[in-house]
Each structure stands twice: as structure tokens, then as C-alpha cells.
Length: 247
Image (cartoon, rainbow, N blue to C red; front, side):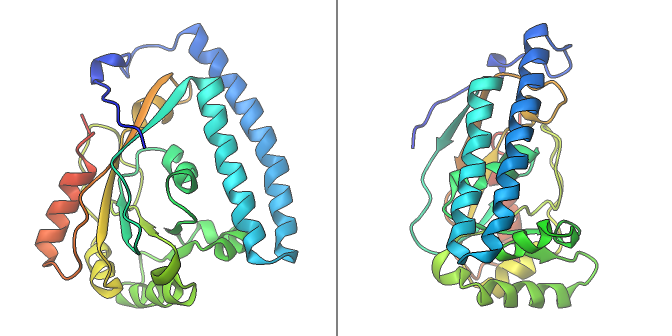
């Protein structure tokens, strides 16, 4: 994976009005990506009749389609700094926009993702999500939700085969802001018994806007943290690591 430094000065001010080029690029992106997505998601429905591996392939195709549209229509390049370990881990990732949520299967191989319960309640889409390996997060259920999440993780063989991904802030956070981690994060870390790899991302200034902007989105893979650390230690370490690009 390549490593390239990009400074904040390489980007236009986030409050500046969009240029005509940015508007045209964004309109092209919306038309091409979403029309293609209708076709690909429809094909995904057919995978419900096929072995689970067919859905994994189709999801990767859709995510690569999104990355292609970002690169060639929006002018967004992606740079990854650091490497993922080759053993089971829990990934804690900063969440600034839908970019990284869609792009995860490009960054990690067949990740299992902890997602809001509401997403998995959507007809058909929710069924596809569960089949792929999305794990529902019911933020109102407390310890019962944590136990349910761990059971779902183990039932899908995540600890043996697939990385687990959680957005520990619980929602998208504006670039430049630091939010506390959700209370359930430390409990999940303890119950999963896996090392944590924090990942920072700075997609917000380019992607989380109506008129998207060209530039570089970076992922920075942090140092692996062992299981069993005290709550205060793991929360501080993860929050610092996922915010290193937050400037």
C-alpha cells in the first residue's frame, strides 16, 4: 500500500462556494454511480438464491464501482498509510462520510461491520446486509445488545476469518471535531477478546457535501492494540489514533 502525505493547504477551504467544475463532476457522479448501483443492487437480490460467496463477490464489485466513480468522475484519489495485520482483529474507524462506509470492502477483505439496527430493518436490503455479515447495533438495549452482537459475530465465524469493523463514535462526525466514543465500545472490545486496529480517515472535507471536491482521501492504519487493556487506556488510545488526520 502506498504512503503519500497531503497537507490541509492542498485542499480548498471547506466553506468556499463550489466551482462550476465541482458541480458538473458531482452531477455526473450522482447520475452514473446511482444508476449503476440500481443495476448492481438488483443483481445482489439474485444472490439470495445462490451460495453466500456470490454476495461477497457482488458487494466487492459495487464497492469497486464506487471507488472508480470517485476517481474518474470526482477526481478523488485514495491513499492508504500503513498495513493491516493478517490475523483476526477488531477495527475501530473514524466515520466522517458515507465514503468509508461504502469503501470498506476495498480496504479490508470481506469485513463484518457493526451497523445501526435501523439499516437492517429495511426490507430486502436488511436481508442482504445480514447475509453479507452486517451485525445489528441496538443502542438502546445496553448489555443485552452487546451479548447479541457477540453471538452474531461468532455465528458468522468472524473471529476466524473476517475482520470486524466498528465506528466507535456511533455516527458520522464532522471533520475537525472530536466526539466521545460510545459507551458500548469498551464493552465490545472486552467481550470480543480481539486486538484493535484503529484507522483514521479524512473523507469529510471532500465527500460529505452536496458538491463534492477533488483531492486525496487518506486512511491511516494505526498501531495494533492488544486485548485486555483497561477501559480508560483503550478508549484514550483509540480516540487519539482515529483523530490523527482530523485537522
